[in-house]
Amino acid sequence: MAQLSARTRIGAGGRIVIPHEMREALDVQEGDDLLLEVDEHGLHVRSVRHAVKSVQQRIAKYVTPGRSLSAELIAERRKDAERE
Image (cartoon, rainbow, N blue to C red; front, side, top):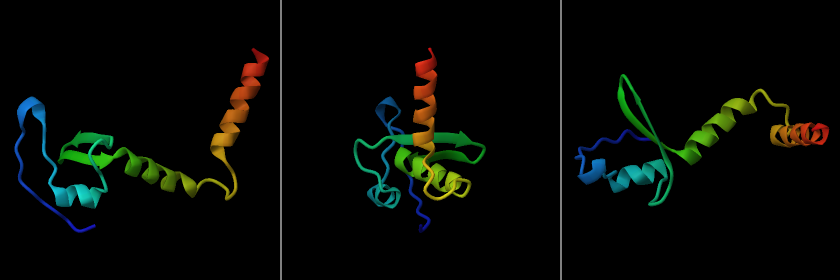
């Protein structure tokens, strides 16, 4: 992704306008959920969709192809529910 920079202002109610080019680069649209993180370098903005995809990619290298962790979790929960 190309590095983009812009200057903006904090508006009424703490609102920040994200310029069109940046919204396109982030693949976000009006109504999308965003995650905001603050660290020693500043404010970071990313879409929830991107965050989930990133975690899935990091976890995928530890999971055998064809294995469904969600299906395994559901099966475990059903067994636990039957025992109760």
